[in-house]
Image 1: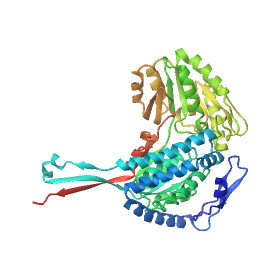
Image 2 (image 1 turned 180 degrees about the horizontal axis):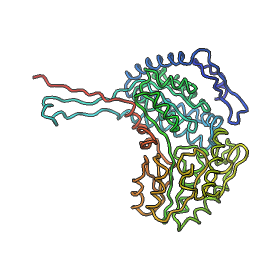
Image 3 (image 1 turned 45 degrees about the vertical axis):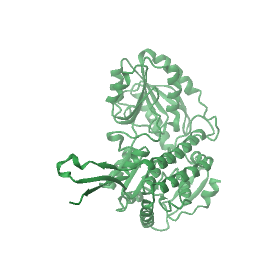
Image 4 (image 1 turned 30 degrees about the vertical axis):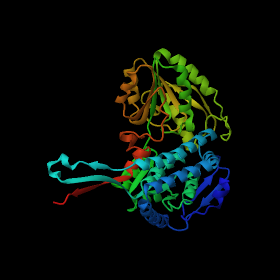
Length: 474
């Protein structure tokens, strides 16, 4: 059904020759060439957004909550269509895609509930002698128009994390999805337009790099929320030129398996964290640091399980790992394997053909300056490295720089506290880095990002405080 729907859709805005294609590029579903200047069309979109945002801000929190529940219901009713769209264009297996759709639905439900209790606060003016006879409060006001720029790896739920809090707080939102995976965004926009409360509060605009820069610079874009790579983030930040920014920029996620870890529990969690989205995941388990005393055991069990993975048709429920997004990603993975080996590492297991990585590649003990240690791979490559004590493990992890998460498997309550030295946004205990829930604050410090996502955190970022101070009549 969704393919027929997409083929029949005629967006009002032109794009720079962007095609919606099947993952193997064998079938073009839709290809659109610009008819007029993209900036002119974006001006129409931004005007629609400003009008829709003003109307949405006037709606009650109850009305916005109901609209978000309606969006969640729409996703649930079309869950199979969304899941197949994610598989068809993207990198995930059908099992992973269904999980993403369920999370996106929940993200909208979380926002629908959160807006009911999202409010300002009372100010105690009597705390200052000059405040005598005054009382007041802080309101939260929508920033206006939010521009969300999203990547290919989670083409629905990462959009939900920009759309749901924006709508909840009375903002209009324009989504610029990744050109390889636009369909889930377009489908979500279609659902939103069926909800009277929303109107044009959600619009999707496909654009190339130059047009995206113009979108960011547009004076009526009030906040930019970007999820993606650090090099692209630099261009976004320059174009934003002082506008509020929300950025989630990933990093190298490190999981430590300490000497007292439950290895039987750690192995399946590691496999899941290594293979999710074929490693194209900002929480991807990229480095595994294992205590010397259990290194051989962990290596043997992990390699065995990775070699046993079922790889194949991603629409098959039994398939356990997806694909790389394109050949550039494939070549980067292979180049980094060669780099790691030339630096003293060795391949423990894994496989690839002329087109893609067919089994996750596990690299033993690469040099400390290897790309796989110092930069985010965004692919199914993982290191296995040894350490002798937890302080050494912390120092090894720190070489990878700021990241979204670090993790440790241990029974010792004192060990996790040592991880707080690392520049990371979250610390997971007896789990891998590849875990989050959609209501928690999510992001990283320094070069790993700006601000935090997660529904309530985004709602705070997408609103501005407005102080009321009332002086009692004399």
